[in-house]
Length: 511
Ligand SMILES: *Cc1c(COP(=O)(O)O)cnc(C)c1O
Picture (cartoon, rainbow, N blue to C red):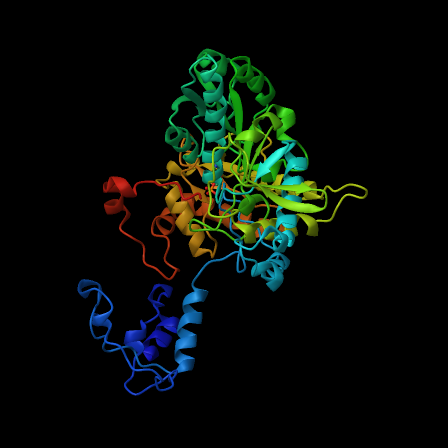
C-alpha cells in the first residue's frame, strides 16, 4: 500500500487499514540511511568460516530507506504497542502496576550495572549489600527467616520451594520416616503449581474451592493422610480472596508432618499487613516483578525469591548472601543444599529495582520497615471500588470483599449471546488492554480485573464507565460487541477455526 493511500485511509477508511508497510515495501532505489566506512580489513567469504547449510549465501535486495523514514517506521510500530506508560492495564493475576522510573535510573547506575559476577567478593560488596538488604526486608515482611534471591521467576521459585520440601522429607525418610508422595493443590491454583509439584515428582491431590471461593477445612480433612508432603496454596488465592481458614489448614498439614508452601504471587494485597509466617507458612516465593515493580510481560524478566523458616535454611540453593562482621560473603558450604538453581546470583537488576521501589515508599520512623502497607491497602481499595461499581451490570463471581483483584463472569451477558472473549475484544475498541480472561478456570467465563494501587480514581471511573457501556451494548446492540474489535491495528482472527485446534483453545492469558 502506498504511503499516500495509507494516509488517505487514516482519514476516511476504517481504522483497521492502518497497516504499517514493511521496509521492503517502503524501499526506493538509491535512498541511504547510513553509510559504512570502507572496510579496513580484507573481506572474508562467509562460506569459508560458516558451515555450508547454515550460510544463506549472498544477501541481496536489502531495503533502501532514508534515516527519517526508518525512524518514523519504527516509532510508528512502537506506538501500536499497548503499554503501561500509555494506558491502564487491568490484567488480573499479573499485577501490572506502574513502575516508577526512579527504579530504572537506579538499576542503570553504572557502578551497579557493570558489576561482574566473577569478580572477587571484595569488589562485589555493593552488589551483595543490595541483595542482603533486600533479603532482610523480605524476611521482615514475611516473617520467614532466610531467603534466596536466585530463582528467576515465580514458577522457578515454586520449583526451588518444592525441591526444598522434598529435601526435607527425603532426610526424614532416610531416618525411617514415612514416604511422602503427594502435595495438595487447590483447584483454583495457577497452572504452574500442579506443574511444579509434578516436575519435582509429587502426585497432586486436588482440593475443590468451596462455595465462597476459598478452601474449606473439612475438604482438607477428607484428603489428609500420612503420604501428604505438604500443601501448595496461593494466598490471596486466584479468585482474589483471602483464604480465611489458612491458619487451621496449616495446623492440619503440620499434624501429618507436611510443609505449607504459599504461592506468594498475590502478595501485593497483604504485604505490610500480614506476615505469612504468622499464618503457618513454612516456604513461600514472592514475585518481585509483580509486587515490587519491574516491567514484565511476554514471559519475563522476573525474579522469584524463596523464603523459608530457619529449620529449612540448610536446603536453600547455594551460594547464600550472608554478612560476617562488616563484610558481605557468598556462603557456599551448605552440604545439604538443593544446589545452585541459577547462573550466578539471580536476576540482579530486578533485585536493585525491588529494593529501590521499597525504599522509595519511605521507611517507618525508627525501624527498617518500609511503608509497603500503603501500597497493598490502596490496591485492595481500588479492586473493591471496581467491584462495587460493576456489580449492577456484571455477575461478580464471588461477591464478597475482595483483595487486589475482582473476578466477573459473563453469565448475564451470555443471555444476549455475548461471551467473555467478545467483551475483552470490545474493550480494545475503547482503547483498553483487556483484562485476564478465562482464568481462574473454575469461574464460568472469568474476567479477572486487577487495577493495582497505581491508578487514580479518575482512571478507574473511566474504565468502569466503559465496562458499563459495553454491558449496555450487550443488551441493546450485541452485534457491535460480537464484531469487535474493529478499531484496532489488527484484524480479528478467525476464532472459530482457532478453537477447533485444541492447542489454541482458551489459554489463560495470565503470566
Ligand atoms: C504469576 C503467577 C505465578 C507464576 O509466576 P511467573 O513469574 O510468571 O513464573 C504463579 N502463581 C500465581 C498465582 C501467579 O499469579
